[in-house]
Structure formats: C-alpha cells, structure tokens
Amino acid sequence: MRKILIIGIGSGNPEHMTVQAINALNRADVLFIPTKGAKKTELAEVRRDICARYVTRKDSRTVEFAVPVRRTEGVSYDGSVDDWHAQIAAIYEGLLSKELGEEGIGAFLVWGDPMLYDSTIRIVERVKARGEVAFDYDVIPGITSLQALCASHRIPLNLVGKPVEITTGRRLHESFPEKSQTSVVMLDGEQAFQRVEDPEAEIYWGAYLGTPDEIVISGRLAEVKDRILETRAAARAKMGWIMDIYLLRKGADFDE
Ligand SMILES: C[S@@+](CC[C@H](N)C(=O)[O-])C[C@H]1O[C@@H](n2cnc3c(N)ncnc32)[C@H](O)[C@@H]1O
Image 1: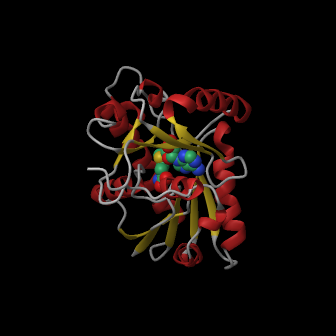
Image 2: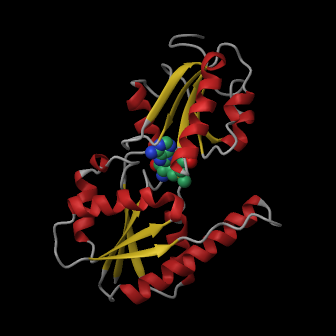
Image 3: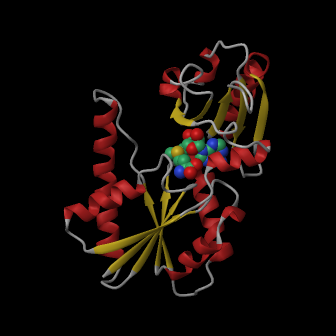
C-alpha cells in the first residue's frame, strides 16, 4: 500500500529539522512541495534548501504543486475553508495516484508542526475517506513557530501552573486578558494587539522567525505597540509578505 509521511520541517530555520524528520525525508520516493504564489517563494525556497541539505538518497523525486488561493467572497469563513480543503484534497488525490506507485512512499513537507494551524492531516484524512486511493500515513512532528518565538525571546510559554490559549487575530478579543493571562496569536492579518487596552499587558512579537530576516520586539504593549506596527509595515513592504506571531501576557509567576 502507498504510504504518506507528513513531516514537520520547522518554521524557517533548516536546522529545526529533527533527526526523525531527516530520516523520514530519506524514506520518501517522492517529496511533495507546495508553492504558494510568487510572494512567498522564500517559503518554497526553505523547503528546497531542506531537501538539498538533508536528502541523501539519489533516487527520490521532488514534485512541486500549486496550492489554490482560498475564495473568500460571498461565502462564510467555514464554507470558504471547507471548499478550499476539498480543492486541495482533489489535488492530493491526483498526486498520490499519478506520482506514487502502489508501494510508493510520498512525503508532504509541512511548515512548523502539522498539528498547529495546519490542515494537511485533515485534508489527508479527507482523501482517505473518499476511498479512491488506498494509503496509510504517519505524522512526524516539527518545531512550531510558537517554540521558535519563545526560544528567540528566551521565555517560557506559560506562567507557573497557569494555562495558555492559542488563538487567531480574529478571535483575540474573546480571550485576552479577561479569559486568559497568556494568549498566543497566530494568523493575525489585522494586528489585533492594537485593540488591547490593558496597561499591564506585555507583548513578545516575532516575524520571519528562524530565517535570516527574523525580527523580534518585546515590552509593555502600550510602549512598543507603535514600534511593532511601524516595523511590521516596513518589513512587509520590503519583503512583499510577512509571517508573524506574538504572545500577550498579563501578570507574573506565582500571582494568584
Ligand atoms: C498556517 S499557520 C502554520 C503554523 C505552523 N504549522 C507552525 O507549526 O508554526 C501560519 C502562521 O504561523 C505563524 N508562523 C509560522 N511560521 C512563522 C515564522 N517563521 N515567523 C513568525 N510566524 C510564523 C504565523 O502566525 C502564520 O500566520
């Protein structure tokens, strides 16, 4: 039966690759690499660099495939994501049946870790449920952007004995600071931190983590908010794209 390896490749630094991930890369006959459009060629570049550095077997192939753009007009958020996943599932199905032999091993190289704000596992399950191509799959964990953020700022993720929430910019208002003393925000296209008014809030922000363009800023939110907004806008204009993540915190270890 065909085998799929869903490999977490870390979030920008090729040295995030674990030994398990490198071994998995070398088990694969075909390496599937998503390309996400012209602006994010750097991301496809990191994947190519990883293959060039770590793939030692000579007989594997790389197959690049275009990821469709998610349609957002005239549909609900959930409907739009569902349609998008269905489109990608059809692409995966085609790749598996055309590019892999009956006993072939294919690898999907997933940014960060496949369990964190990534739908590869979900989509692969969807392909399996369609039942057109028989295969099994394994998941190999990777270093997430959240780990990279905490490492670059040299901070623990949680306050002692306290919970943490991971959320999106769109939903930050539901959590921090009322519900959660530590919120990590990903996928934030609106810089939701600028609407947090709490004078005690602190922010640890990072963009392009793990890459040579990494930028990190931290401090009391009220004091560094404008600097983050300006730095982010300038970096985005220069690079043509941005990926950033931040942790908001209120309180200290051992506070009740
Ligand atoms: C679709 S999610 C993928 C997350 C990924 N699976 C992970 O484990 O980090 C993309 C979001 O992750 C965050 N992200 C991923 N890589 C990043 C990086 N190198 N620097 C800053 N943020 C990053 C950003 O919030 C971005 O909007």
